[in-house]
Amino acid sequence: MNDRCMLMRKIAENYFALADIHLYCDTHPADASLDGKINELLRETKELVSRYEANFGPLTCHAGTAKQWLASPWPWEIDKEA
Image (cartoon, rainbow, N blue to C red; front, side, top):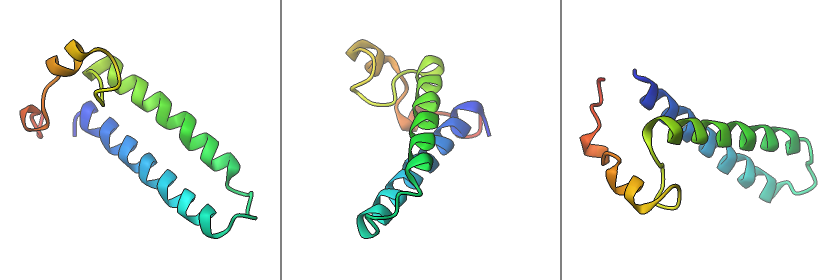
């Protein structure tokens, strides 16, 4: 697995973990034990996204410029095995 795929996988894992923790917090609002974990995941995800965008271009159309977004490869243009 190449660096691009590994970064994307880790970013997706972090987003999933954050969504899962937020759902838990919705049903257990008095449980403050996960505050540190949420902050840690947010910090790590921000670092991963910054690293991805520095190496491979913007992840979303809201990051970078329109020219950068259009110049980056579309999902079907990325070599899955590279």
